Length: 198
Ligand SMILES: [Zn+2]
Image 1 (cartoon, rainbow, N blue to C red):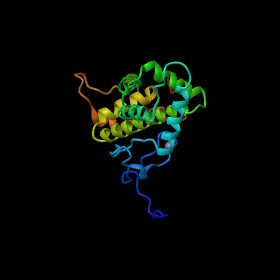
Image 2: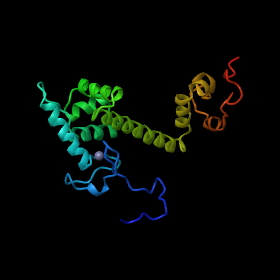
Image 3: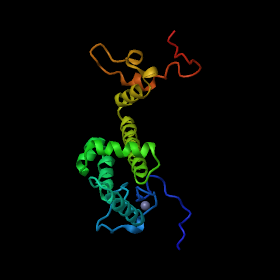
């Protein structure tokens, strides 16, 4: 077994780690199983989980009733759509299931520690979180050169302190006074739990 070098890459330099959405194991050695490289940040299904899911599906379908549509491939497709920022309803339709089916699976995974719905629930939730983190980083980066965007971000994030009524600094004709915006301290930031509203 090879050991990893001591030097830790910075987050910006780190290569995308492909993890199994189901068990979170890194599956870098599994590239090519489907004949293609996974997209950065995408999580595939490791071989072990794929086999476990296939066995679960087989057991499910031995029970009388409509067959389950759950499969490792379907979850991967869902996660691709979620990773691209799509709403769950759209992701479900694209993956080939009804939105109510996905909602039911997600609720099962939330309230029961049951394979494979628990794993699905966690994978979808963490994918959503990853998208939001990426977008926040994007907005923060863009805000370095766009004070209006920075102010909008603050208003959304801290409406109590940066709400429109308290930080309106545009001119009579709507002319933005950017220089004032960027130097404005967050009023009442410290020591006043009531926000200084009087
Ligand atoms: Zn796995």
